[in-house]
Length: 334
Ligand code: DAH
Image (cartoon, rainbow, N blue to C red; front, side, top):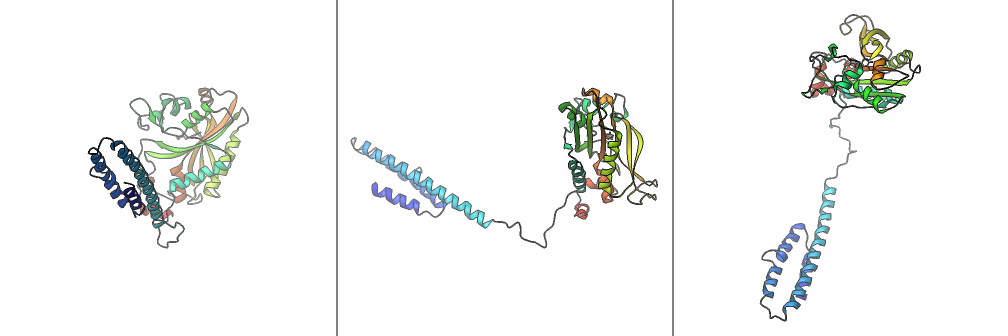
C-alpha cells in the first residue's frame, strides 16, 4: 500500500487538466474503483489484520482525496487565468467602423433640464408612477368634479389607484416628508389617455417647487428663474408670462417663448402667433399648503413637458416617432 500511495500521488501531481483529474477520481473512488476493491478485499483478511489494514486504507483515502482536491483547485485557477487572458478586450482600441451610441433626444433634453436646476442646488425628488387619488388630485386642490379627473384623461386601476397624470404629486410627497425651505425638481414619466401628433399615453415632465417662510418667495423670483432657464435651454429667446389657471397655483401663468423657428415672424409651428407655449407655473395655492399642514409659508411651482422641449430643440414634428424605436430616427441625433 505504501508504494501504491506514492504512485497515486505522483499520478495526481502529473495531471494536466481537469478531465484527467476526474478520470483519476473515478479510478480511486468510483463504484469499481481502487478503494471499493480494497475495502472489499479487507473482508477476506484474517481478523487480527483487519483493523491495521483498515486504518492504513482510511488514511490513504484521506490523503489522496486531499491531493486530488488541491490539484483540482490549482488546475481550475489556471483554466480561469487562461480564459481571462484569451478573452481580453482592449476597450481603448480605435475602430473606424464602430457604431457610436447616443442619447435618446428625450433623455438628452431631460439631462439638460436637470443640469440647469442642479447647478442652482435644487434637490431631485421622485415619486411612484402608480399614485393615489389624494396625491395626484385631492391634495393639489383638484376638486372631485374637475375635468382633469375625467376618465378620458386618467388611467385608473380597479382599486381606485391611478397612473399619475403629472409629476405634481411629488410636490405633496416632498412637503409631507420635509420641512421648508424646499427647493426641488421632480423629473419622471406620466400617463394620460391621449394619442395624436403631439400626445402619447406616456410622456415625461419636470416639476419644480420652491417653498420658504412667508414673503421670502415671490412671483418675481419665479419669473427670473424661468426666464433664465428658458434662455439656457433655447438660446436668446423672448419670454412672456400669460395669466392662466391651475388648481394648485394662484395666481397661475402659462409661459411662452418667441418662436425659435420664425423668430416671432409667424409660422406653422407657432400657428402664426410668433409664440410657443412651453410651461405652466404659479404661486402655490394656500389650499395645497393646507393639505400638507404647512403654515406661514409662500412658494412657487412650475411644470413642463420634456417631450415638448425635445420636439422644439430637435425640430421633431411627430411626437409618436420618439417612441417607435426606429434606428433611422435615432441615428440622426448622434
Ligand atoms: N401639472 C401641470 C400639468 O400637468 C403642470 C403644472 C402647471 C405644474 C403649473 C405646476 C404648475 O406645478 O404650477 O399640466
